[in-house]
Image 1 (tube, rainbow, N blue to C red):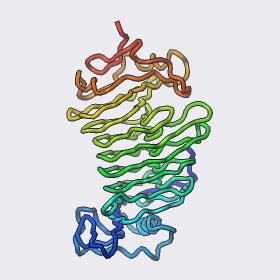
Image 2 (image 1 turned 135 degrees about the vertical axis):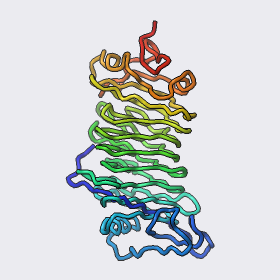
Image 3 (image 1 turned 90 degrees about the vertical axis):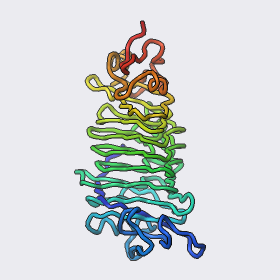
Image 4 (image 1 turned 60 degrees about the vertical axis):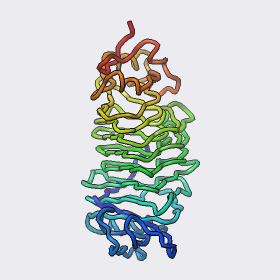
Length: 356
């Protein structure tokens, strides 16, 4: 990913944007509310809640104006209700940048799209050094659409939290270039966290013209990052590492509920293997599980993983059956080494072993 010269912190402010249609009797999660930015979490709003005055804030769209309002005040929780599609230019500086600021975006009545009209990020969530309590949440009926020839991710999470709820979606971000210039739809780094309770990340791609590229849907990198997949799906994305790629430096990846992943790539170094923790209630699937090595030496993808835990938590014949082993893959070479099942398999405790 390209380094930013300036990082933005996001305050623990929950913002719900409700864009309601006027004059047709349509309301939001609370009867009588109109489109706008509200102070308070979605569940705290009542039919007497009033939208905040943000029209005087700088910015080309209501999203930019809302972020300007939030970033210019002490950390708080906001809700914004959105009732119309919003075209928005790609940017390297559109950020939620206040400590303890939490923002939730909710679409009114039906799917509401926030769509990039040019290359660049849509949201930067976090800061360097990290500020506490920064959170962005995509709620029901919110779809983020990327750009067809993008050079960046849609959401970049840096030391902050990002969540998706049922009814949300991130799609149509197409990134191509050299290995260092390709991007997933969602990028999480440096103590950042991603929690998926529902929704979908689908129809994104990250393609390199040289060697490797990121996964098309979600890429989790750097020490301290965490991933919790408790519902929803990350499928139908393309890239060197498939739908989801988790670095060996990440702290954890947990899967539960009905969460589904198309192609998941777990990475290893000579020291650390990033295993996946399975909860007892997991009923979803991983269509393909690839194991990635530390570099491009032929034997290392196997050497990094053999006799190491690939799965932890609730590991049994049922949960192992919800996963299909894919390939050993190199660090930066797009051609897989070979199918894992040709030579190896998982034992009853989720450890990769050589086949007898």
